[in-house]
Structures are given as structure tokens and as C-alpha cells.
Image (cartoon, rainbow, N blue to C red; front, side, top):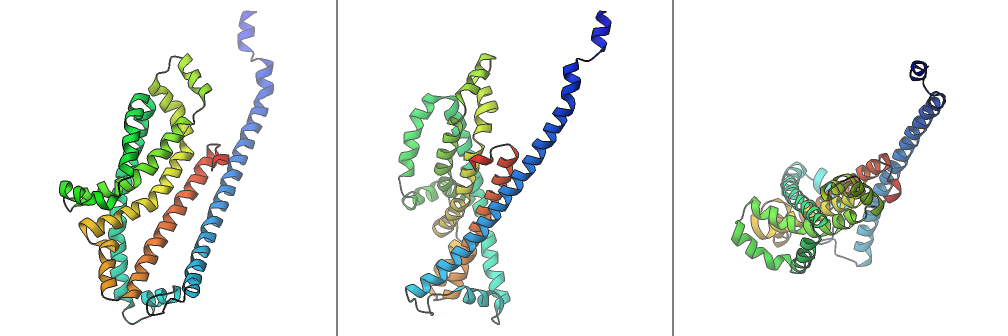
Length: 295
């Protein structure tokens, strides 16, 4: 009799199997719908942002009556890049400088975001270290970076190390605050559950805090993208030269206003594209992990 009982599956299990399959299929369909909705919202936001920037640009030139000799509109930038006789040389020069700036931005972005994530995790594991170092970090953030730049250049030289430090400082503090806030947003009940089952602080960090902080982490990445570009421009202007940051001063002194406006447009447009690309990835990822309501 015991053999028969072990060989026959429980009736509840047999009855629940089709329901479970249907539920899983419904969950997958809802996940796909949420992903498409999030993707659509992000693309629409990107398009509206581009339109708003163009309207503000043209409207500002008209409202403030800026001289056409100094103020250049979208058509002037387009002609400078594509229709004037030396347009090919203009594109080669400015896009080459843009690639240099983007390379410097990647260095600062990676340095700042990695350090911010590691420091935030240390703060989560040790409240004593957080209470000791967070005020120092905020105090350091209040010092203008232009004032710190000579010291940074003196220590690290006019090389990629200075780019990493200057760009990393611009990225570090906003990213650190966002990630720390995200790690603290984990559910206390989930932390208690891990503790009851013998989990350590490291286990709570890996299993609860880090997954719960995904929205804040993506927010930190979004903020860090334009911050990294700003840090790269500042490092090029103050330290290493090259790129857009190292060239705009020469354009201004030579009254090459078409080149100045085109350089600004390229940097701004790149920052907007990268920012919205991160936002699209964020919307899709959070929708797939069931956090679409926190986008």
C-alpha cells in the first residue's frame, strides 16, 4: 500500500500543473507588455527631449537677438558639417576631437562609477565607516574642482591618470549618494529573513540590497553619463589637452564660431543620446525584473 502511495502523484499536483503553466505564460506575456510599454515611453521621451532642445536653442537666439556672426542655429551647424566646401575637413576634425573626448569620458565614467559602487558597498557593510567617511566625502565635494585641478595635475601629471581622477571625481559623488540610498531601500523583512537563515551581512548585501538598488543604480549611471563628459572636457581644458575641451578655447580666440557651436552641439547631442540610451536600457531591465513601477 505504501508503494502505491509513492508511485501515484498527489491529485493536487496533477490538477495544479496546467494552472501553473497558464500562470507562467501569463507572467511572460505581461513581462513582454511591460517591456514594450517601457521601451515606448523611453523612445517617446528621447524624441520629445530632442525637440525641446531644438526649440530652446532657436528660441533663445531669437529672444535674445544674438548676432548671426556669433550665434549659430541648427541650419548653420548642418551647413558647417555637410554643405560648405570644406565640410569633409570640418567633420574629420570635430568628430575626431569628439572621439577623443568620449575616450576620456569612458575613463572617468568607469573610474568614478566603480569607486562609487565599491564605497557604497563598504558603507552598507559597516555603518561606522559610513559615518566616518561620508562627511569627508561631502566636504571634498564642496571644494570646486577647478581649485583642486592644479594639485591633481601636480600629483598625477598631464596624462590619463589625471583624466581618470578629474572625471572620476565628477562622477563619484552623485553616483555614491544614489547607490547608498538604493542599498538602504532594501526591505527590512527580507534582511531579517536572510539573518534568520544564518546569512551574514555580505549575504544580505548580495541577495537583498544589491537587487533592490537596481533603480537607484541605473539613476546613478544616467547621472554619471553627462557628468563623465563634463569631467572629460574639464580635464582636457585644464590638464591633457586634445579633444573638444582642449580645442574650444582656440576656436573662440580665432573667432571660429561655427566650429564652437558645432562642437557644443556634438557634445550636447552625444550626452543626450547616451543618457536616453541608458534610460531605455533601464526601463527594459526594470520591466523584466518586475520593477517597472520604480522607473
